[in-house]
Length: 447
View (cartoon, rainbow, N blue to C red):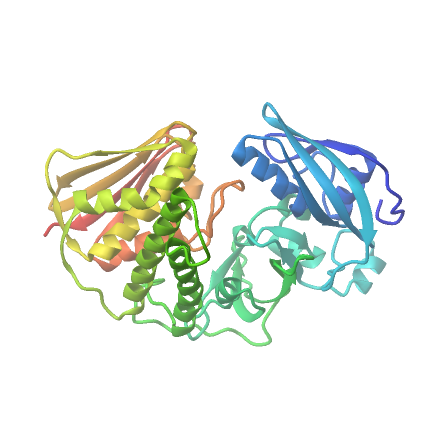
């Protein structure tokens, strides 16, 4: 298709419940192959996949303009995604070719012969979309990670690479993601356990509107052996000054923009919109307080009313629960006071509640219960979601880990929650099994 860019008219395809392209007319099938995948595998065209995900999330049929990359041309397309049971039917038209956008990665699996590999300049090459999901992967890097490139398309980069802090405790990729800027020197190690360290660097990709669209980068062995400097803090607790600034700057802008909406400084506004903006500003200030607390060398410890903390946390996730029709039910027969930092406790509950709401079925419920046991205060958040397999439970608290592909997020929430709990002398326990929902229990010292 990319080598013969004549408009083929309306092109159809079909995506199954697992995101696989199970049927496609020739032009769409050709783009799938050029993206390093195949018919019957997961859809490897992130712009089209994004339309499919949004249609599923909203439960309606959608039409959107997108730009998809071929081997030698990009194509401006009009994509219609129609929900048909568990599947999504695609109708794609337009097919207007234009020169490929830079930077361009020549790293798709064109052929497996030695000559092609010898002239492939993209050693260690990779690319992701704005959610850090892989859209391209070089042959040599796929072999090092011991994965099939076609299967990796659409999967989070951190599913295969564990990001490690550098000697200064920084995570350049996260700082680059927060500031939408290029990065270098991100240490990483393959999750397949072969112990070979890699250094990641990435340049920013932008769509035709100039918006951030992901990274294109390299993952190569370092020129020297990387040293690890022991830290006096528990792993993952401390924030570096650079990371602190990277997170505070966009939050400041969000809060200022929300306040401007509330004040109606740009003119009349519907009251419900102003109410939404109030919620956004409140949530932003809450998160800012959490960042400030995590940046400090120690947090103030004192009595924390778990019922009051749960109520405040529930109000912060109420809007996302309302969208899915998920109710949050607090079950507590008597007051229970834990020892810790109030802001930290609320943030822990918010992170766990948000996770539970995201993974609950529409119309479901999430329950918060409070109890005392063995000299500890226990707060349990239980959902009726799909549950978590034993293998996934061992990594769910790691940074940037996200289970599944349809749910948005960065994979930081549960890691932050666990680190905050341990910082207060507590921990988070998980009880789950596939098909049985999940129970996250926050265990804190009694006041």
